[in-house]
Image 1 (cartoon, rainbow over the protein chains, first blue to last red):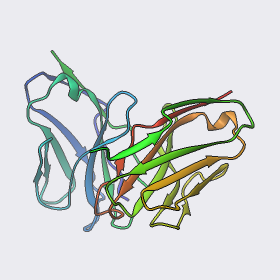
Image 2 (image 1 turned 30 degrees about the horizontal axis):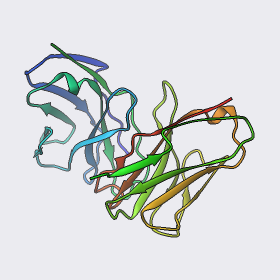
Image 3 (image 1 turned 135 degrees about the vertical axis):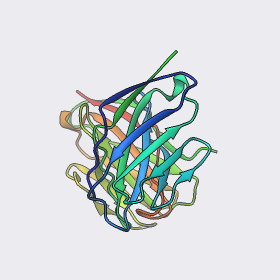
Image 4 (image 1 turned 120 degrees about the vertical axis):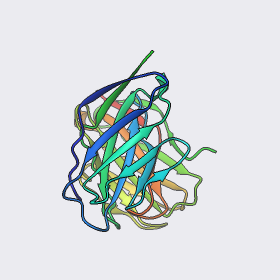
Length: 110
Length: 113
């Protein structure tokens, strides 16, 4: 599975959009980009995933560049409850093991 | 809408004791997983199952056993607990591997004295 690079931390004002970048320059053509978050010591929470196209669900939007070497997770209206560590991971079809890196610690400020 | 439920949430054991962690999912998922997460480290896969009656070793299987007698349940056993097994244990399940997301429980915090 391709390695990912994320900034260690970011701040975002409450009510503003949070844009979290992820670099995955060695991604291969059939690997998926997944985003999870972990709030305090809870279990990782699935947010969104995609292969090539941009995706949107009730939680967030995922923008994947045309060359697929990077992506951005967008939380459109961040709230204090979105304060968490956000993980970007790249998964090959058939992979059982998730490898979470250090992620981005997002702090939403009141 | 329970998703993945883990019991117990907390447990303290003495070295040498045994216990079983229970994971239950109500999403009719074929795949189930057990991970451990230690401070400053990422998730490490202990065992996984690709369907009822099947189990396989993950990255760190030593000292653990698992069983999947029913599709919705995945049990993790510690036969003789050791302090090195103090950790937070997460169970996850998925419809398939890779193309669909794993959904995680809220964890079991296990301390072994």
